[in-house]
Length: 280
Image 1 (cartoon, rainbow, N blue to C red):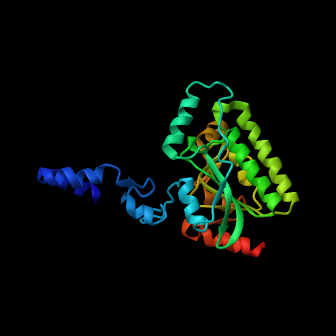
Image 2 (cartoon, rainbow, N blue to C red):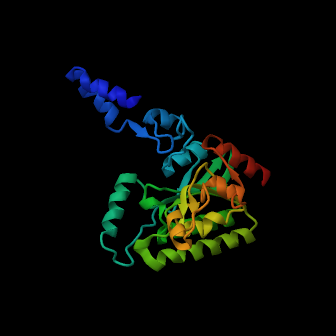
């Protein structure tokens, strides 16, 4: 076990302890919350951020998601100039946004653009859980709406990767309005007879689930994702009943007909390609 190795190194000579033990402890290892195994981060990274021991899918940044799904050198990002403002003058909100922009290298919780999947042109939107847990504010809603409009105008299929804690509380009713706006845009995309593939990742919750995430012509999901509107604890406390095993997980939703297929990360690009090819 890794823990035993760390203890052994700490008992070794100082020079060795100061190098190898520090490497073990300082950011090079990660614990899988599913199987509790301590994993070397480089191994997890090479395995598409999937636990090699139990298959748990770790969360991805939008950058890595795009690298895994879009053909190299084909992604053209759109609407990078849109910037979030503070409509409610929410204390500390602007400062938090500035810090996140520096930390993540992105301006908001979604990236949109054009790209190719095995040579097929698509419009793609990828939400990023590293930016306020992918919460949906006015800019997120606007960028997604514009991506949908691009798909309708250019007559291209739309692929959207969803990860979110829901509507952004710091923007109040303005964030909730994005649910109607994105849904209305998708209705127009449907009228234009363009394909929309929604891919749900862990977690997809709140107002995002209640709007564009569940409106796909085809809805895919990664394994063992939390997908729902309110959280399981809130539901249990409201109805005062014990929820079924695995409630609000991908497998439960597939069994009950809410999603079409569970796709492992290693198969995601090929699965998207086959769906896109079929609908060309």
